[in-house]
Image (cartoon, rainbow over all chains, first blue to last red; front, side, top):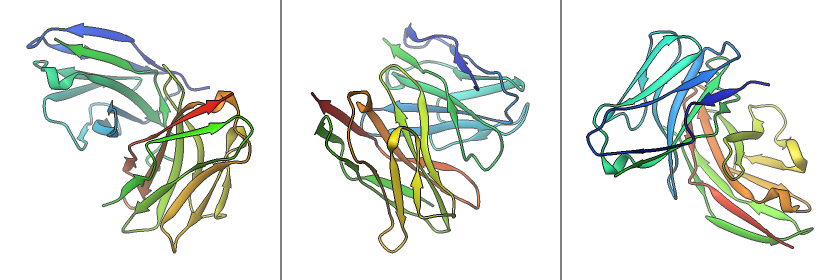
Length: 113
Length: 113
């Protein structure tokens, strides 16, 4: 089975800090995604990547950036964390561009104080 | 652009009774439709998908969904609920031109003993 691993389950940061969320997948998938999940809003796409060093903005990219230096790793960066970025962050990967099946990590619950 | 509306934010059923989760979608093109499930403290897992073959789709754990183009619906059902079905369920639509996924807000299912 595909495994998508997010480095932290819970994180607590202060306003203005730079925050790194790491995600690694072990099945050589081409595509990787970062979503945030908020109650009543479902999942919203922040950024995605279809190849190494390639990135595209999703629906809510403001305040975030990403890095994909290696195929298996996709990092989400909060340049200057703010309280409205308190959320559950989910990483996902898929084999190809049809996205017919996404594999998700367990999520990182980020609290910005 | 595509979108999804999950008509119930919360559904409560008794163990052994049927479960119905309602989903309506809008899509400019022929859509692909999915249901994902998220158990507490877990990532999302694909339950089933519709990608243009049979309109009645069977998934894992006894769930099935029917694609009804005339009603723009993709409701999820299970004949007999089990305690392990308590989770959050997401309806997802993808336009086949760009394969971007749009998630519904989610339906939380509780199962009473």
